[in-house]
Length: 119
Image (cartoon, rainbow, N blue to C red):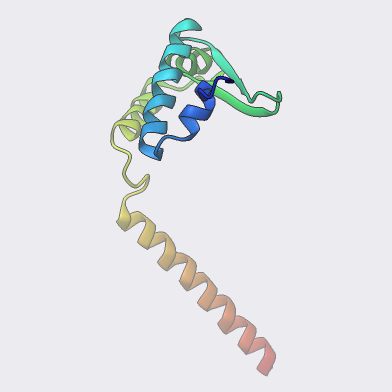
């Protein structure tokens, strides 16, 4: 009688989505550790089809230091603050003021267009 045991992939694919997520994260964590934690890890499927790269936090930090923009200490502090507090990137009052200014500009353009059509 042939072995009816599913392959590890078949077994994982048969799991509920919540369990698939846990299995994926556990395997990815192990792969990151095997790669040294600071590498870009190419991701392909069994057929060799390209799926992308996993960029670990350590790898992202190394790549940023090497290729990222060279920011002033003030700008870097701003970026780090926005990273820690990922709220709106502009204060709401500033967004509203910008929209009002844009609406006024459009209104003036429409008035000029209407005036030139009458003349």
